[in-house]
Length: 155
Image (cartoon, rainbow, N blue to C red; front, side, top):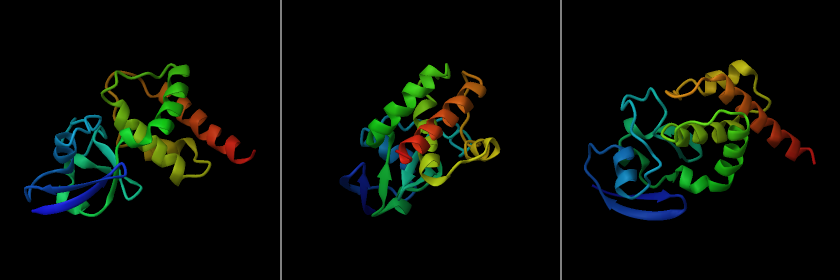
């Protein structure tokens, strides 16, 4: 099956199997930040953006992304670096395996929600699981990151 994907602004014409998942396609193309975790859409490690919205690539057949814009964390390096600095300063570092999917979701949240409450933040992040840290540091970092965006907009 011939399809076309636009990944981080680069067009790819591919011949894929009908039952191929987007996670496998992305990794074959060298986008190794997209990780395989649960393989059941529960952990968020495989999060990418499709047309600007977070999507779980482990459960999305690649043909469904035909002619769509896909963004991995490689395509959000500036935003990811900004969040990583805050994340580290709040003592919420992760091992790196969960981080790309988590960061993709946080950056999407910043674009989508305005002044979210703690419950809205927790709900938005409910599909991202971290196996090596607690969640309080992450929540502090996310709130601080969202406040940074609000301060920048008022300058």
